[in-house]
Amino acid sequence: MKKIAMTAVCLSFLSGALAEPEITALTVAQNDSRLVTISYELSEDAIVTLDMTTNGVSIGSSNFQTVFDPSVEPGGYPVNKVVKKGAHMIVWQPRREWPGYVFTNSEFKVELRAWALTNPPDYMVVDLVIPSNRWFYAKVDDLPGGIKTADPTDAEAVKALEYDEYRTTKLVMRRIPAAGNQWLMGAPVNESQYKYWLEDDETKDPELQHYVTLTEDYYISIYELTSVQRRKVVGETNYADIDINVSGWKLTGITPPTVTYLRMRGDGTGEDYNWPSNDHDVDPDSDMAKFRNFTGLQFDLPTEAQWEYACRAGTSGPLYDGTLDPTAIAWCLSDGCERPQPVGLKQPNGWGLYDMLGNQCEWTLDQCGWPSADPVVDPKGANGKPVSRILRGGGYASKWDRFCRAAARRQMAQDAKSDGGFGGIIGGIRLCCPITISVE
Image 1 (cartoon, helix red, strand yellow):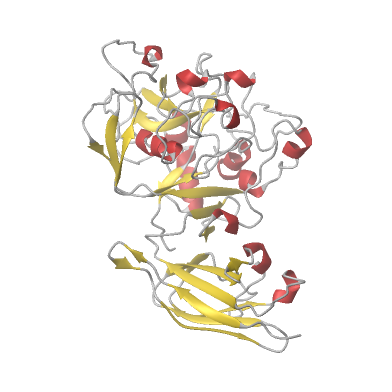
Image 2: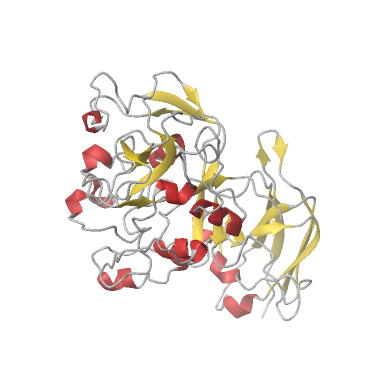
């Protein structure tokens, strides 16, 4: 059998005025047993990703999952993670996991890229079993096993997702391209349903349109946090999960209703843990503190502006699929649901985020407040009314045109567990964190 004709490509990119970490001395070789060896030097600590292509098409990350670093015992996986500066080697045996490959006058390329720790790839996968363990991928198709979904009406297909790792033992985070983009937050008057605002005031509009600029990209989870993901980190507590069995499937249901804003962050009425006056400080006994300690990431709830920008994914209408029918994207009152549904069964938005509308009302950091028409940068919401917080996205019991819209806001006490029938059970948590990655 003939050897593969191979070339090595070091991908170089610029981030603003700053160059990415440099890969030098990149070589690729294959011996008579068809073992592929990739050698390179890295100028500084960086995230390293790998792709292999033939005829300009990726062979798929699932076909090179057995790559290893022979200098590490027992041979650690050498890419899609933070790699220390210096000389490195990657070894791959293609015939073990990529059988039946055929080349006809083709060129096989090994594409290696180094990403700055301040400019990581679009996807980060956080391990909820091994502390401070995380992986990075340039595109969603690179995630091992892929993002799985199922027809919500097919009970067996839904049940087959019961042990899906991205709903149970791992957390998938999507980088949101927000830095420097000015966008229009809120809704036009003919879309707004602000008469349902709890503090009725016909002279004010809680969805008043105004321009917002966010200065930083950020990561946000593609799913609402599931019950099993929370238990992996927080453990069993007296905040018991309810039975959200759907077609026999209990394990990967949504966060339980007992997860209030206070449970996630701590006593918001105290000086130490009150957003925004004390920024991202949280109670050391809170669920959020446990997620931070376990993962090494500065997790928190998104601000309202971060949530809405991520929800819209570049769109401007009430629904992010451009329609006035939520059926394809959101669990809401029209579905006749009596409880939260498993995550990720309806269509995602343009940035691959699921259930941003419907299913469960989601907590944001912000206190209740009336927006101004003036442009703002990195808004943090009101300050001085900590007993009340803002829920976004609506829930399975919501009328979509009231609360399952990108701009819809719902004021609620931060210890609330139920939305009084407007959105159903409360407890939706979508984790958010900065993109800068620390090195332990």
